Image 1 (cartoon, helix red, strand yellow):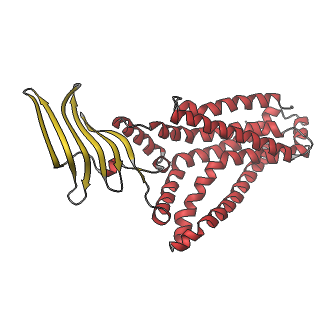
Image 2: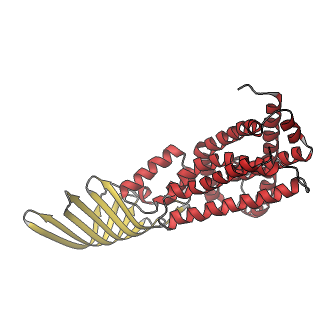
Image 3: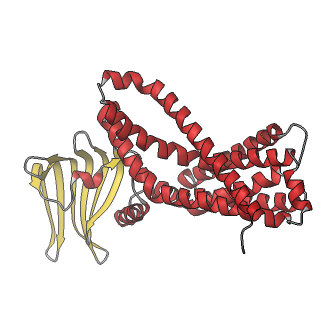
Length: 360
């Protein structure tokens, strides 16, 4: 299908309005964030170059992509309602262009923005987040690791470990157990009150242990207060950075999820939600574009103000539903895939209904 001048006109309107809104918001967000953190920057004597390149050039991609669907929605409503108020849409329809044909340039522009958001979510923003969190850890906060609780892992074939609690700061685990299981049979089990990493000797120190070895000749039990040993894992294999899922590009995130599954770790749902969200957010662009056109293509009293009010209310309900379904995935039994895509499905159906009901 060959594009006409009116198509380029609508595409230009869409993209210019959207990027103007993003640039304006970026400036406002930077000023607000700088106002909140300037005391910390001064107190820590952070170099200006580090603030610009190490923090804000990494902060803006995060905040902009987070709100891109909302700004697409507002941009579509804003310029479409203005066109409707000036009777431009009526003129297009009267000239023989069907309403569905008029949606083509909207979808092309939405596809361009969605492609950028897709690439940003899967690759660019995680790298920016990594730089931003590194800056915050260096200059603004203390530790960037979480304490692990109920940590399970398979460290090699048939070898399993468990810790009730692990403290990254001390590199020490509590209520530790180590098992060797072959063909469903327990061959060896070690339990200890504490396991601590000796960084100088690169070994684990086990305190107050009880070991049980099961062989053809029966059981052999040993106990002690101190034991040095080498295991096939290190502290960095246990500790988990805060928001680590937001720092990994998608290929790395998928690999990390597979590692967690191999370990038998809990909380994989958080990572799956993040993985599916990166694609769902890009698809959301098309849904909000269609809803925006359907809501703002009719000429009404009040102009774009009424359309913007309705649009903000609708987008807010979309965000609430998304967060609500995500909570069910992380704290309930709802599939992470469904939790992310159910809001898109419901609002996709709403978009189809509004488009069919829109004046043509």
